[in-house]
Image 1: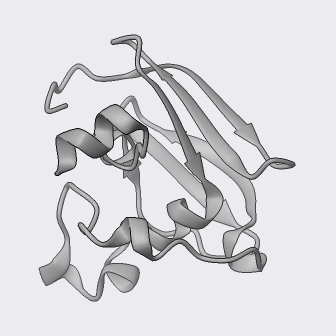
Image 2: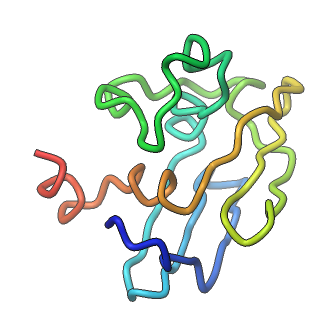
Amino acid sequence: MQDNKLSPLKIKLDKKERFLYIDWNDNHKTCISFGLLRAACPCATCRGGHENMKSEPDSNVFERELPISKMTEIEKIDMVGSYGLSIMWADGHHYGIYTWQYLRALCDCEDCRLKRN
């Protein structure tokens, strides 16, 4: 979805099940595992430098989900203005902003998978 007005109505961080749940203003629901969130970290270091920065995750990110470790444990999430989230990981990593568009692109539900292909 390329709508600039995309925004979450509800965000739930489930540390036990290790998922971030987002209910969107277009009635879509997204569920993203912590391993996928970390594999898709949007910071310049994780993306391999500023020249690799894009508003969408890398196309192969769904094959790179990371296993359970300090690297994939979320300490907390914070809102960044009205456009995204900042994630503090248990290993201290806290760089990059997960915009609403970026988080929506990480949705791996059947409808979103079909739209990507």
